[in-house]
Image (tube, rainbow, N blue to C red; front, side, top):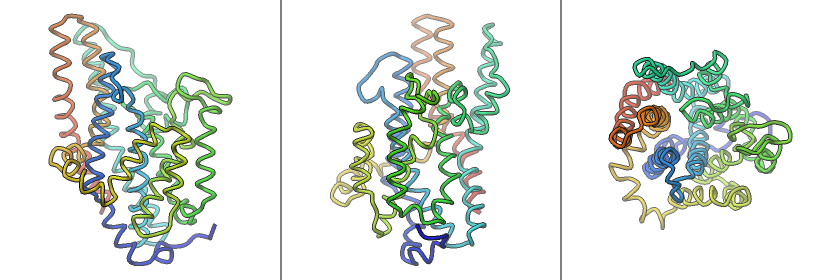
Length: 349
């Protein structure tokens, strides 16, 4: 690998413009909306016990999000590095990413803890408060690094923790030029193969530890780097995206199918077919609120089903189940407009 080099000396002015344009993409925004709805309805399916095909596996949607994250993070890092020296670019990148994901997440997490305790007090069925260490681990999004705290909150924060780990590492990957190295791709693939056996695979304990979710970056770095390689291909650079997509089928063929569908939707022949649906007003709306929908849906579902179990009646169940979807969408929209957008705008300054 080469030493630390600036973005301009790496890929020149034309890709710099491409990097700026690549920060928005209507088709991929539509995919974000679809993936967020998949996670939402997948968790609904879990609580209802329907066990519907495809819907019951929202983890594959999370893998799609991870690839899209790598795709956009490379463009964001490249655009920032084109304007600022390395230390300033890294600082701005960290600031942008922190303001992009943390305020909305922290507000919903703390709000959900308060809501659960308020509901318990009102109904006379108080819930045990999360421990101080557990709450700190989740609020800081470091929970994904600590096996006992990977889960325990209604928000699927394990995936946000792994996202944060990627953000922390990516400036180093970018400024050393490692994102262009076949060595990193091979290492990331080997880590993805080994992690379930060494660190755990859901209910199966690993040789070294037991992570109940794939919350360490080692599990998913390869998927992030597929997104990075894809972005480089879109910028007109040579990349390993196609062999990496093929290798993804070795890791998990179902996840790889989802990623491949997203990847192919950007190619001209298929794009003409899928763009009208993915760029429709509905898909774009859910794409815009996808992050808020991702962090809001869990607390709403968990609170509703807690009340259903506390008051088991057909009427209560029907009312609460019917209310989950509109309540979640409304809450997500409010969080998006009042918190997520505002802090994201600050981060871009």
